[in-house]
Image (cartoon, rainbow, N blue to C red):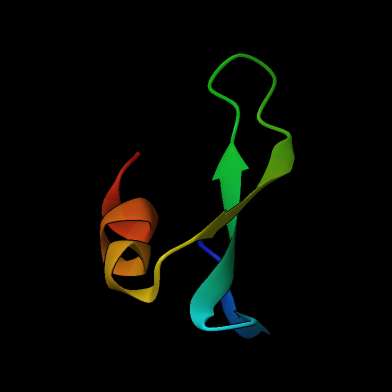
Length: 50
């Protein structure tokens, strides 16, 4: 199960996106959230990467 969330952010002339990915820990089985603010073109690569 994976949760994907993307929000658009605008700061001046630069457009950014905040991506949140839910990752399951192999040791404990607990889920954690990984957040990153990046260029909108890089969001797909971030969500596909393990």
